[in-house]
Image 1 (spheres, rainbow, N blue to C red):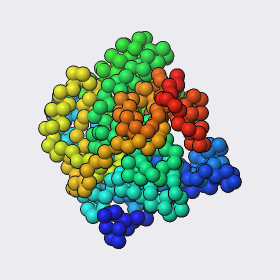
Image 2 (spheres, rainbow, N blue to C red):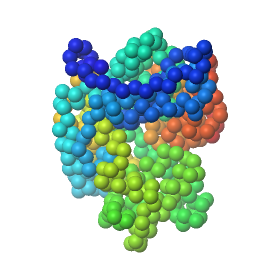
Image 3 (cartoon, helix red, strand yellow):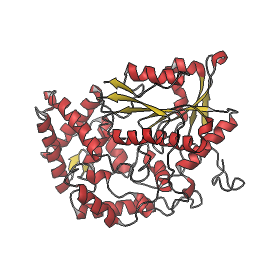
Image 4 (cartoon, rainbow, N blue to C red):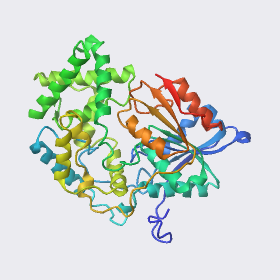
Length: 436
């Protein structure tokens, strides 16, 4: 693939794809390209979804792809001591400044990367790569299943190459008007609503001893955050401060299943014990999470994805603008606003975007799949995507507080609607509401 599509005869990179061919060649519809989100998440393994989706596997070649500069596609590796830049600004200017220093150091850890590559890590170039894959496969049109960030990638493809789109499904759509380094800036209320839903569940499970009402459980969380803002909580070998507690909560809210809520409840119980000064040992899952965030030993998808965010949309390079925004929303978004509106490494990035952010505004048919309580890509932003794709229909899972509504939620109404569309059925005549 050309690094810079404006110079197709210039420097190139290799992009890795995987393929599992349709099991019923006589009924083959075409190829189904997939993206798991991120950005920064390798997509090669997604072809292995085929055996778990036999109806679709009969009709499609499943195609996985590591996006440019991710996984096996000319990867860019930032030198970071953490897996993610997501942190809260904490309670005051002092803790905010500590975060600014971290973001500056993280950006410095990416300056070892080739400056001739960094500006071309954008989603628009990845969409161009998708179309190059289409041509290489000899297909006139492609179908596509993208989740989370993959919805933005799919929307950019529809904007640039809509005439080559067959069936496009965008599950948990990102708001295309804010996507970039500030992708979470509007998430505070949605995360708080998801936390409240979990708190109601935890209140009904008294064995966690977090409170017997939703309000009591939320008060426990607030006390944990307040104490962590004054002194780090000792969790085994780890020190968890007030800049990390909101992210730890957020990471536990992507799934509203009993198993996921039980895991988050166990984490909060551990934090609460540490708040009281008791010696605690993290569970294996919490240990793995904290090791990734505090020592950088995990999947490091944010390290791979940050170049994409910084190449997609320019942001302010003045730390004071972020602190003012946090302060303006601290009363209305006390727990999560300082995290969702915080400064990122892109404020100190060594290169600038070479293209403006893509404006999504087209009538190519597509299906937008949503959960009303999604904390990661809030429903309000999913409606923005639906309106920007004026030819789309929306399938909404009402009453679900989760990220990912197709297949993972186990809702037959959603699953049947999406599968029927991918198999060649028409879009619903109107938007469809499914109940949790």
